Amino acid sequence: MAFVLKRTLPMASVAVLSTAALLLLGNGMNPLWPFMWIAPLPVLLLAAEAGSWWVVAVSAALSMLLGNLTMLYYLHFALHAPIIAWLVPFSLVSLLFTAGVLLFRALLGRGSTIASVIALPALWTVCEYLSSFAPASGTAGSLAYTQLRFLPFLQLASLTGPWGMSFLLLLFPSAVAAAFHIRRTKPAQAARVMGSVLALLIAVLVFGIARLAGSESSQKMKVGLLATDTVQIADPGPSTQDLLRSYAEQAERLARQGARIVVMPEKTGVLLDHDTKTADATLQAVADRTGATLVIGLVHGVKADSFNEARIYTPDQPVTTYDKQHMLPPFESKLTPGTSLTLLSQSADRVGVAICKDMDFIRPALDYGRAGVALMLDPAWDFNIDRSWHGHIAIMRGVENGYAIAHAAKDGLLTVTDDRGRILGEVRSNSAPFSSVLVDVPLHHDNTIFSRYGAWFPWLAALLLIGTLAKLALGARQAREGHLVAHSPYK
Image (cartoon, rainbow, N blue to C red; front, top):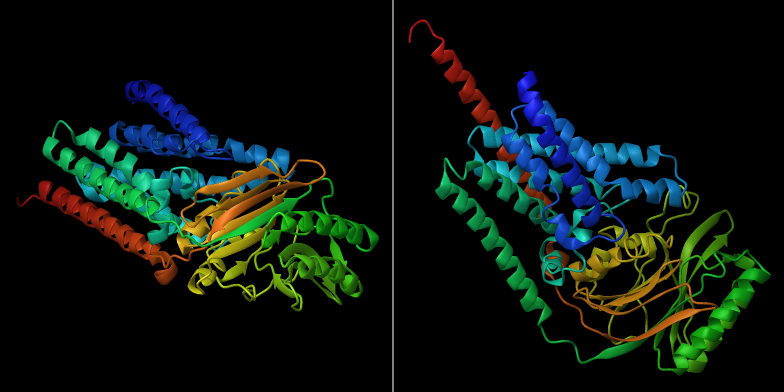
């Protein structure tokens, strides 16, 4: 036993440090997408070769926990959340990864190579789907967001949502580890496993390249985004009114430059109900004079309720609103969530409105896709440090549902992307006194498989997971029966 540990522990240490380092590079606030494809590989190779299951378990858990230290910095040191806000969810993530690695090891050890390759990706995909309903995060923890800059692969989201991407990200290293383990005893099977997975990846990339090469819509709309970081959230009364006048001046400047829509951040100020006439008059006048539609986010207090609201000023039309549906706990726990979609009137192409964290969730983005939206307006507020990570989550929703995104965040980025996830224009919001960007946005709604069928892929992953578990149970039963026969006095 001591000899086994002496030989295994150095290999385990290398695996832990390698996987953790690759996760730190490939995941987190500013992921480098190629590293995520091989990040789990060292621990999976350890699982295939090591003799001690508990060494494998400790190594898998430790590597995943260390690989998420960037999120500890983000949550605890940047957002000042208690350490438990990092420790609890990422301990669960580490246990999930450990369970998947041990399942891979058990199946591979029983000769079920195909099942072993599928086990970790299937388990992870199912759990990612279940976690997408968590009110604090939605889909934000998905591995798929590490691949937003790998545009050919990103197009898979139009078929499967983020879950197909996460599945393939873990399928590839699982296949490499399994093939490496059986290369000497079963070289033909090793070649078939790797060949099948590579063929699948090539098919996905060919689809992505073809989708990116599709003709761009000739119909375009000039959209302006506008933000200031000099005021976090204006107090009710004169402070909010002054800030809205400043926004109105800047919005008019963009409209004079050709903007047909101007999007401003969420929660720019607090608007009490008795102040709405004054505030609305300021922004509606700009819309009427210029012919541009203005969208700005405010906390709107109405009697006993408060709403995180986007107020929409359409030329010569009554003011319309959209209420944010997904609140950020605990900061927005006292606000009343909305329940309905809002589509802009007087637009030849359908334009929808959501607010910040709404885009972390599959809905309402999926509902807007099914409504035929060509452009989503997304007033937002990020935390500066997460401007790329959180600010770019909305890109996934656009690819899934076939529409462009205009994301205007204070303490973040002003970003415009098309329905393929290409960034058409982007600036930081920290220019004083105002940052702005003006972009010609192709208006085209793409009827995607995902917008039609929704979250079908996690159910397929669940069936695959059940199949691997059944294979494991069958193998264990056969092993027990073989053991009983070997020790039977009547054999």
